[in-house]
Length: 503
Ligand code: 2AM
Image (tube, rainbow, N blue to C red; front, side, top):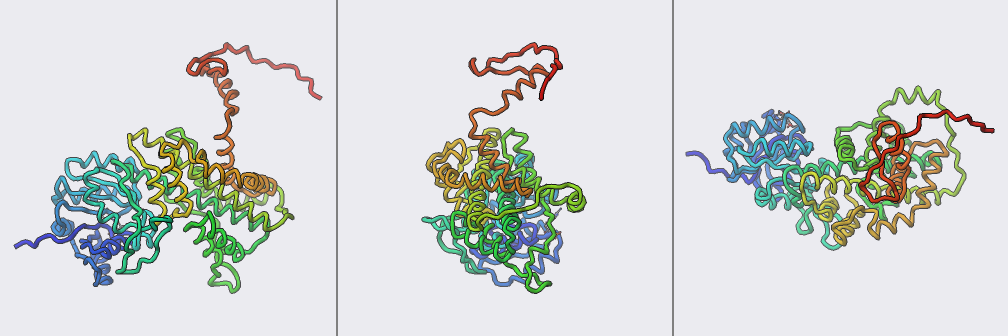
């Protein structure tokens, strides 16, 4: 007689994220059936984890996996984004899953792929997308989960998602980080919420990653300016970041930066590891996707794109070494007050960070029009308060801003953030000037300030730009003294070469 299915959910793909998420789910008392293409990996995983609270079921074939799960079946796929996701879905379909079974892609998939997959597999299963952020530790003890797809399917997933997601304190919004293997956090507000249909979850996850790129780049520029202008050593800089982590900048990324900077080098006694790490950064593509999407939609997310380009520039290590021998600029030369400079860098970082998040939320505002989603920005900020890489005290302030005004046009216009920028603005400008004067590249600080100044400008030089377009391409222009929507074209006079008598 065939055995009754007993598993609450199935998980496919036992690389480190898959393993950790499976253990997290099992810690909350759910029985998880696990499958991996390479059976040996699955066997090792089962052997390493004999006593999980919910229990693991070892499945050597997809058919066994399907037969192990209670109806409607729920599957999590955690394989590399791209063709592997489709390959797994097709295997599940071939193994006979039902049309009401829910297949959740928890990988970093491009949201348009999720939209496509939901349609493509609609007559075979409920395909669902869920972003997961928090790295390995997050997956194990509580990530931020960003689900999007069929709302009825969400009803079946909600209990598990809310159980495994990171938790924040209901009053303060600060993460509760006390989970241990087998002992999950009890209580708190889960860092997950249903975000909308089809690709909404993966889109929001992509924006999370775009913001992560710029958040990291801003921290790196702050580090580099203090290092070069003040000649501070990594360990001392670590103390500065530790201190910043006590205030408005309190965040996971600032905290790990402090720890990284204080890390001694294992090979050189008395020296710091960070000074031996090669200055070339890799990338997996989510920052690029965010920037390409910003260009496609025509939304200025210049700082996010700048953060991606900063990585690209860093990767040109050999060219930079060569160029450094030929291209001259000013030598760093700062003789002002050290503590004042540190405080100014902090203000520059905070002001730039506000602009970076403003850009990320602008993208989501535009995308929801394009895809007819109804994103709840307060909720999105709230589920980023814990578990994910950009988790920060700051996200409570964004949650509050969008709770005060769900239709806020731009985060910069929120009274709290406006006030914060006013407070630090002079320092932010000072740092950008110092960077330029001293020849230190600070593209994120600079582009964020340019965004701020551009966004608050009632007039920009685009009058001249549009006139240029009309001159060579008859693209027409609107006038300042007639209603919008009336277009003019001038038969521009032939180009002249006036005789200039200058000097
Ligand atoms: P593997 O151990 O057999 O390589 C991350 O690569 C995870 O995705 C691994 O668990 C890997 O399985 C799995 N994976 C990658 N491509 C896959 C595919 N086409 N089908 C099934 N699993 C795949």
